[in-house]
Image 1 (cartoon, rainbow, N blue to C red):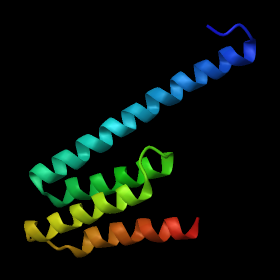
Image 2 (image 1 turned 60 degrees about the horizontal axis):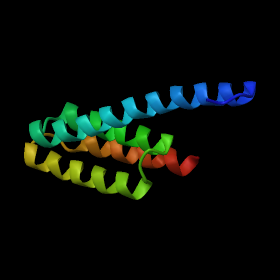
Image 3 (image 1 turned 90 degrees about the vertical axis):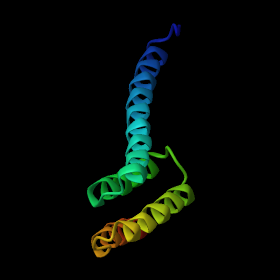
Image 4 (image 1 turned 135 degrees about the vertical axis):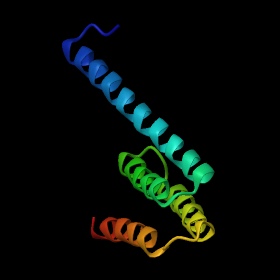
Length: 100
């Protein structure tokens, strides 16, 4: 246990951040898995959004996210639904990253 007051505060902050990051990472993993299993448009868009959030937080690398989103967009073709809406989500997230 830290003795200095600022070190105690830092430890408290680290635990809080660790918990939030863990929850986000688990939600991201679950969303990707369910998107692969059910292959519905809603599940795929949710997985894409959570993938982008994970990248923004630094939980996964941006190239890994690109690979995951590419695989998810391939699932849209197999569902037979309109793939434009998912492509808009993917393009939209790429555009916001380019601005930053």
